[in-house]
Image 1 (cartoon, rainbow, N blue to C red):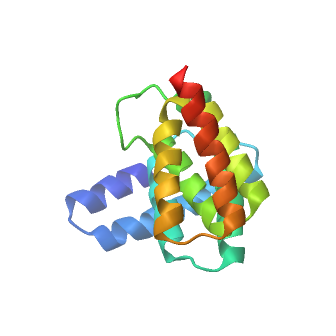
Image 2: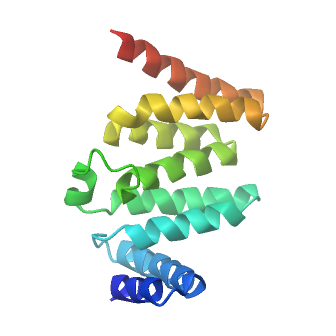
Length: 165
C-alpha cells in the first residue's frame, strides 16, 4: 500500500508528500522487525534512511540510525539479499549498504564501522573496491579522525590487495 502511495505522489508531482510517506515506511520497518517479520520492499525504506542520514549530525542519532539499518539488513527477505540486479546502480539493496557504511563512518565508532564494512563485504563483494576507494577520498576531503581513517585504510588495502590476485 505504501508503494502505491509513493507511486501516486510521484505521478502527482508531490515530492514533499512522497518523502513523508517514505518516512512512514520506517515506522512499518520497525514494526516488522519488532515482530520478527521479513521486509520485502526496500526502496521507500532506503530513501527514508538517506533523507534522515542527510539531516543528522549528532553522534547518538547516527548510532541509532546505524543500529536501525543493521536490523533492517537482518530482516530483509532472502530474495533481496541475493541482490539479483547486479547491473543496477540504484538498486535498493546496494544503496542500503552504501548508506549503512556512510552512516557507520560518520559515527566514528570503530565497532559499528567494522560490522557495517564486514557485512558490506559479505553481501556486496563486487562493490567493495569502489566503496572503500570512495571512502578513502572522503577521509581526505572531510578530515576524519585518525582512528576512523585507520579502519577505512585497513578495509581499503585488504580489498585492493585481494582484488589484484
